[in-house]
Structures are given as structure tokens and as C-alpha cells.
Image (cartoon, rainbow, N blue to C red; front, top):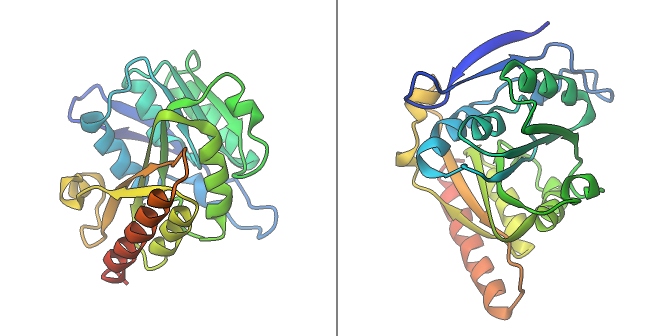
Length: 239
């Protein structure tokens, strides 16, 4: 049994999500507790940001690297008619518990997904309207698989939103995505309810919109390179 938290995700008192943080989801290779077992600060930030910036009514939503599933569960609370929470196999039982605890079994699914590998079970019906991610920018080598998955789950109108704590290596991850042809647009950090969402006010967060480039062109490649240089410059100040 882990710790059960009641997390407010909007100003309205009714907008709260129940999340259980696991204490028994172990990485079979390292023997350590999986990092997705608890709610990361970026998930709190994203879940406080999306109620006032995104419209989920009637939308299909995919959360990649869901962990405890807070952003995806928030989307269900805000009116999404289909939400798919994905992560590695060891974290799926915890995700299922959180779906049941919030009464979302009628519209929230839990599925295993390893970035870059077979995702036919995720995209068998259609692409998604919105993709959510939080704290997924750790290892630049993982971005190749993430990029492959994003291309398969995104349609022409799909919106991809990612929240992250600003770390020295975040820029390398974003560079790798842009090298694959994605556009990365950073939101103003001053718009984030950082102080309300997390206790450490000295930590910087950002929310990015990741735009898959469905039609490659020389102009797109040039824009990706220019944006990459700009992002790297921005992140050097957080190193």
C-alpha cells in the first residue's frame, strides 16, 4: 500500500484528483523503486496549467510516461471522452488503481507502451487530439524512441504539451527532438502556477508545445535548426 494523495488541479474545489503513489514498483534491472511511482513536480505544474489553457470536452487524450497518471486523470476530470494512460508494465497496476479511485473506468484506459516499439494497440482506432507528457526529458537517447511514438500517435491537428523541470540536460533532449523535425515552442514560465503547485519556489519549470512536422521540407529543417540553437541558448542559463 502506497500513499494516497488528494491533489487539487484547479481553483474550483471540486477539481481534485486522487492519486496513490506506489512503494512496491521495482525496476527489475536496478532493484530500485521506479521513478514513475510517485507524482513529480512537473506533473503538478502541468495539471494546474491545463484547466485554464486547454479544452478537453469531447477530446481523446494520450499521456506518455504517465507514471501515476495525474495529467491524464485531470484531462478526464475536465471532460475528455477518452484518455489512454501509458507507461512500462510495472506501473500499470498503480495506474489502474488511480483510474478506479477517481471513478473514470468508463473513459480512461491503461496500456503498456515503450517508446519507439510496437504501439499498434494504442493507435488501432485513430490518432489523438491531445498528447500530454511531464518530466520525460532526461536521456537524449530516449528521444529517438519518443519521436517515433509521437509521429505515430499524432494527426494533423494533434496538440502535444510537455511540462518539465529545467535541468542542464533538458536542452539536449529537445535538440534531439528538433533534429527529428519537431518544432518546439516554449511557453512563458511566468504563466505557470509554480508557487501554487510545488513547494520549492527556486525550481524553474517550463511547458513546451511539441509540433510534429508531418511534411518535411528544407524550410522546416532550417526552422528546426534555428529553434534548436535558441533553445540551447535559453537552457544554458539554467545550467
